[in-house]
Amino acid sequence: MSDTLTIGGKTFRSRLLVGTGKYPDYPTMVRALEASGAEIVTVAVRRVNLDRSKESLLDHIDLKKYTLLPNTAACYTEDDAVRTCHLAREAGMSNLVKLEVIGDEKTLFPDTPALLAAAKRLVKEGFVVLPYTNDDPIMAKRLEDAGCAAVMPLAAPIGSGLGIRNPFNLRIILETVKVPVIVDAGVGSASDAAVAMELGCDGVLMNTAIAGAKHPVLMAEAMREAVSAGRKSFLAGRIPKKLYATASSPLDGTFF
Amino acid sequence: MEERAVEILLNGHPREIPPGATVATLLRELSLPATRVAVERNREIVRKPEYESTRIEAGDRLEIVTFVGGG
Image 1 (cartoon, chains in turn orange, yellow):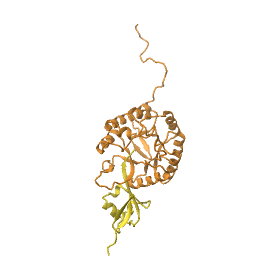
Image 2: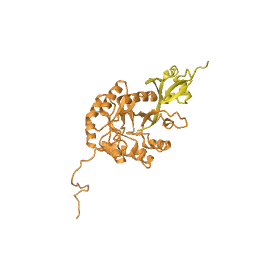
Image 3: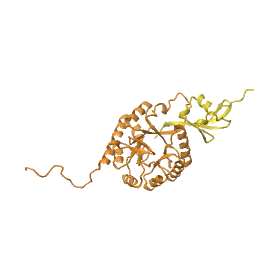
């Protein structure tokens, strides 16, 4: 069965998107990316290290295998986010961006009016915009109407590992927009990822849950399996929840 | 008389570069592959095909960025 994810005209087999930050070292990151099965990996845009003795991330990522998704992390204004996207496009020669406009340093929640304004500008300039947003169905719709290629609501604050805090809002978002819905941020464990997929989300994006685990490579594998299992469970159609039991074995033919 | 070195601001820090330097010669001096970076000169993106022809002037503010690990 072919079950693929299409974003901005590009088709992917994996529904797990992973970050490249916070790994203990590059070899661990490389093995975790491999174990995750992800085809899209996020990266940040920063000043180059002018100290040539330091290795660079791109020495370790096979660009034939992975699609880079540059983010605008740490941008607090529309202008900084747009500027970062321009630089990312020039560095990576691709129009794909994960748009973040952060509103508050403690929660890292998005500044959604600035996010929407930045998204509109970038879409006009030909970017394929994947916005990190909150779990607000109205904002998700606004972002879709602005031409975003997907919406990426948070499950919980970035790096918090709190899991899916509001599954009901995610369900409403899924009913509200037609573009792919990718849960971005807040996932802590494999069951969180599975829940997101069982709700019907099109994908899950995570970084800390893997990179911060005691065994990142093993967690990457767990996440790959959880996303896959959650997706299959969603497609298979779960049974309704009932308060009382229904026997699984026949009542006919009992001999007692 | 030999021309004096040109002072610029590179990634927020003062730096002296040889007169007549272009974006391309600066990247070579820094051993930075052009394919992996983006360059902004005075807040304007310098497109890759323009690296050879873009002369760096005294007082220019240059940003050279690349991709690093992130989520």
